[in-house]
Amino acid sequence: MAIPSIAVVRKAVIARPGKPFVLSARDTSGRDVFDNKEEAETSLKKDAACINELKDKLYAEGRRSLLVVLQGMDTSGKSGTIKSVFSDTTPLGMEVKAFKAPSSEELARDYLWRVHNAVPRRGHIGIFDRSHYEDVLVVRVRGFAPLDEVEQRYGQINAFEKHLSENGTKIVKFMLNIGYAEQGVRLKERLQEEHKLWKFNPGDLDDRSKWSEFMSAYELAVQRCSTRHAPWYVVPADSRTRRNAIVARIVRGALEEMDLNWKDPGYKPESFDFG
Image 1 (cartoon, rainbow, N blue to C red):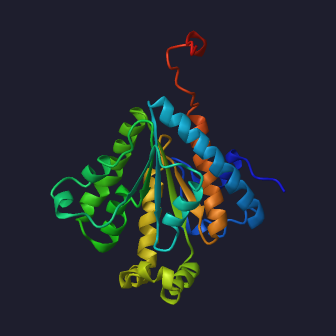
Image 2 (image 1 turned 90 degrees about the horizontal axis):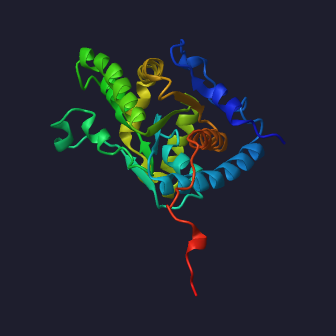
Image 3 (image 1 turned 30 degrees about the vertical axis):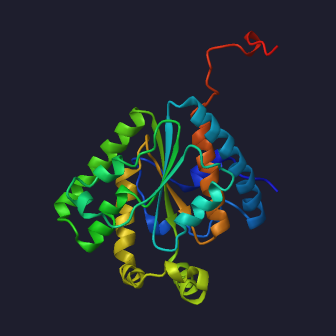
């Protein structure tokens, strides 16, 4: 049983910066990345342990940070991905921010204010459950802002992410790409299973009725905002196991690319005498 390399997984799901992108052409099953679920589970277990070790190095170094952005339609598994990918990760040096509808205080400021305020500190891994992309997704579909303002935001978001990357924050962005049929199954599960009922929101069905509009908005966001400093990875999300394994491979790769090292304390252990 061969686990695909990080490079192979990236190549399979990346939206290449500057290249045409068609969301409907992307697979939602994940079988072309992980042939079977056992393979995916093995990969996830190994990567989750490695991510924890790398996170400790990042925290000890204290100079840079990693920002993981998770976007996707309802039931695509944003919280489930966090739980699985970071299952072995200790809380120290971790920050998770779930973005909901903006408050009156946030609406009184520019749309990126609340996002910049949540960017992880140096030495930390930050995870966004939804993000600034809501302002070119739901805002676009629902008409919450004039279209000309929304059009300006793609360039503003690219500039914002470039600013973060140039100041020590590495960014990896995941669109959890669930299929229409699978979303229907999961929405029904929320109504039928007591421990999931709290997640159900009647408004989710309204969003589902606008599926094509949301897919067009996602396609635009990925096409216009997949950059060298902050690429988009479009992750098949119909299989929870394969989804989690793919994200874990890429998060591990992002941390490894940072070439993290244990911080030099400035002294030699042998110089201390404990009597």
